[in-house]
Length: 124
Image 1 (cartoon, rainbow, N blue to C red):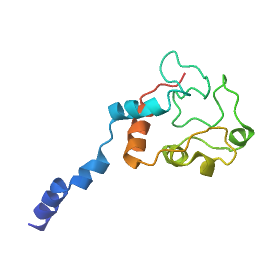
Image 2: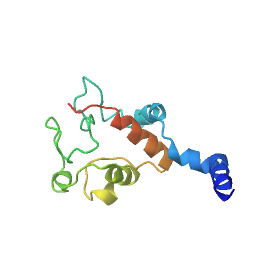
Image 3: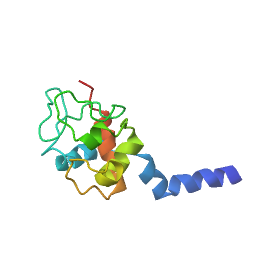
Image 4: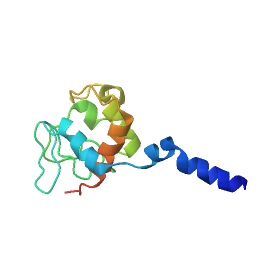
């Protein structure tokens, strides 16, 4: 009986589902904030910022067609989802001296959706 009540409570809990599901389609819309500097997709090239294909799991400063700041080159980061999440919230806190001029995203759900979208981009 207690187990049944627990399952029902979890199923009825809106926050349980809100945090469990991410939306790569919404993440693609969120990427519009990044698209003026970054590209993804089969023909992605670095421009004002590095291309982001396969960025999850990639070492920082590793896109061969982009000139990175010294701070990024010396960061020693590998872009895990946790590091990307922190960087998207506050780039200068994660890599002091980064040349990325972005104030950050404050909405955790938007960041989760954006990361879900970036996971769908293949490495070049």
